[in-house]
Image 1 (cartoon, one colour):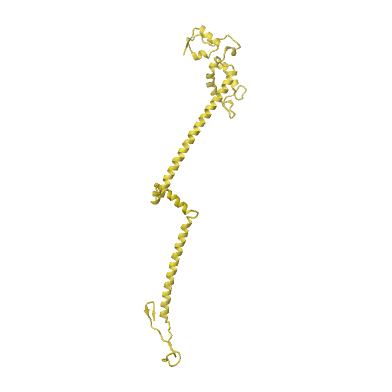
Image 2 (cartoon, one colour):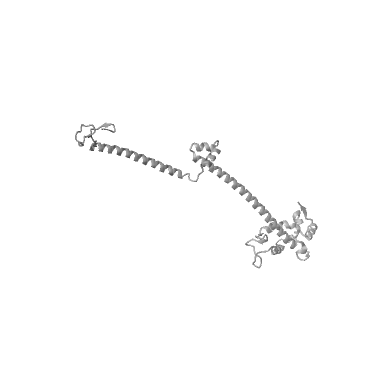
Length: 256
């Protein structure tokens, strides 16, 4: 018997009707010996084992491919192709094709950082400009409040600039836009100092700010130092009419 490329002897099994040499009266049956059965089992085992190994390999590859495909869940292949086509001639496309993803990310991060810094600089410039405008407006509002109170106090017109400078160091605007004293400025009653009280106190500290009629009800007392030889024009103009006449009588020279 020829099995798996080899011949194996067969054992004849006696039996059947007499006249075995007759045309159809008897025949021979094949008996598979233990040796042949073992060989068959071995070959079948090898074939089945190979199939099992191949099947395991295929299952492993399918599982690996499935795991890899999970990373692309939710990604539209056509959209990706469209994006890549836009970078066909771009520097990034070459880097991506070369597998230099880190370099691509670094370049993008650098561009994003530069754009962010540029936007931040614009916002900072705009904020500083807005703050400067607000500060200028606040100073103007404060000065108008000081001017109004100076006029009410009878301040000489040429003394207003000096009063603005000195009052601005003591007063500021509150949230409502009204002049209020700084934290450490209090009036005689212990309450925050007011502009009206401040100008009243300045009649003693700076009497030359006020005309003679406002400084003693028409008193003829002069505030001009008769020992002086010269006087700046700004000082002269800040004097009351009485003091100006006293300066002229004293032959004080007015200089610029």
